[in-house]
Amino acid sequence: MSSRCVPATRLSTLASLVSVVQLAPLAPAVGALLFGVALGACERRVDEPTPVAPRADAFDRPAAEPAPPAPAATPGDGRCIEPTPAAPERPPPSRVGPDPACPDDPTGPLQLATGKVIFLDAKAPDVTVEIARREKERARGLMYRKSMPENRGMIFVFEQRTQHAFWMHNTCISLDMLFIDSDGTIVGIEENTPTLNDSTFDVGCPSTYVLEVNAGWTRRHGVVAGQKVRLDGI
Image (cartoon, rainbow, N blue to C red; front, side, top):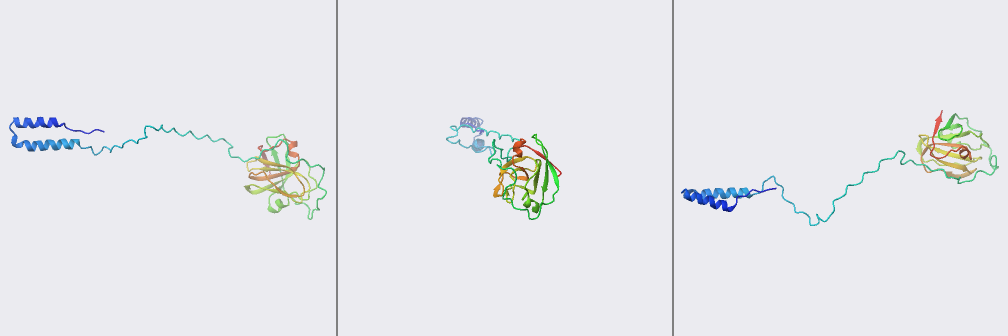
């Protein structure tokens, strides 16, 4: 910013020149004119902003440091997976065969379509599965079964991807339950579920499918949470 002013000594010099050239009658008018020009010159220009006094602490504060950049997103962040423990939380069944208290089947098993579950990250055989897709089929599940071949199972297909919980009501053989997300990721496994038990079992992660196989099958074939499967015909 700058302001333009004419010094007072220059005004007196101009007045003296006026008197020398005998323009005394015009001297007051000329002097007034020159004085007005000087005052106008000392006025601040309209386009100059009004100065702002610095705050008392402005020089005491360190300059603000720029915020650190946000960390880059990592693929897979936020995926809910319940890791498979080194040892099963429940021991394998102590008996071979069905629970002796298994009730009789009042209607006989449902006739269901079949498909295959193929394990992509483990050296495990394909599992041929009965497909429980409708509510009636899912409610029935593997109740009253007294045996199931080694590489057979049942897969429950749900309309919604959410956290599912299962029980072993009227289920006479111990099972492994594999909770599978919509992209085929195994998000958790409930191992060695007890027979004829009305407690609920879940892994705390959303899933779209639940696969039931014989108890101990996943350990025998190296299947753990985080691996992927492919569903064939399901």
